[in-house]
Figure 1 (cartoon, rainbow, N blue to C red):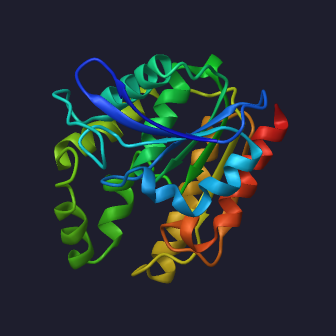
Figure 2 (figure 1 turned 90 degrees about the horizontal axis):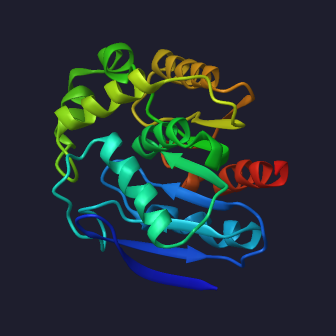
Length: 241
C-alpha cells in the first residue's frame, strides 16, 4: 500500500507518502537532510515498508510541499511534523529516522514527544557543536562551500539557530538509539574522519540505550551507499517493541 497526500497544516500544505501494511507495528517516520526531501529515502523505503508502515514527507518549501511563513528552524519544523502526523491521523508510537540535518529535527522531536517515540536512528546526523568543533578542522575551500549551501530552505543563521536549539533542549532520552556514522566521507583527511566518528559516538550520550554503527564503505548518504545498514538499524528498533 502506498498513499500519497497533501496535508493541510497551520499555514501550508505538506506532501507526505505513507507506504507499507498497517500491521500494528510502530510507524517509521523519516526526515531528510538540509535541502533534501522525501526522494532522499527512495533507496530504502521499499525494504522498510515490508517491516512496517513508513512515512516520508517534504518539509515546507521543498519537493512538492508549499512554503511556510514560519522561520526555517528545527523548532518550527518539529511543530510542523507533529501537526502533519496529527492531521494525517498517524498515531504513535514512532521510530524516527533522521539523516544529516533531519537528525537535528528528529532529536528535538524525540525530546519534546518522548512518550510517542519508541526508537531513534540517526544517519550521519549533524552534531550540535559541528560549527565550533568540526568545521574549523576542514580546508578553507570546504568551509566556504559548506557555508554557501544554505539557499534551499532557511539560511545559514537559521541553521545555526537550529543547532543552538538542539543544544538548549538536550536531555537524556529513555529511547533506544542507533547512531550510524559514515566511515568514508568525501574530502575528509584521516584526522577529520576520526574526529567525525568520535563526534558521532558522543551523540550516544543522549540516550540510556545507544549503539554506534560505522558504515565503513559509505560517504554522507549512507542510505544510498549501504542501504542495508540503515534498514537493519530500523528493523532492530521495530523488533524491540
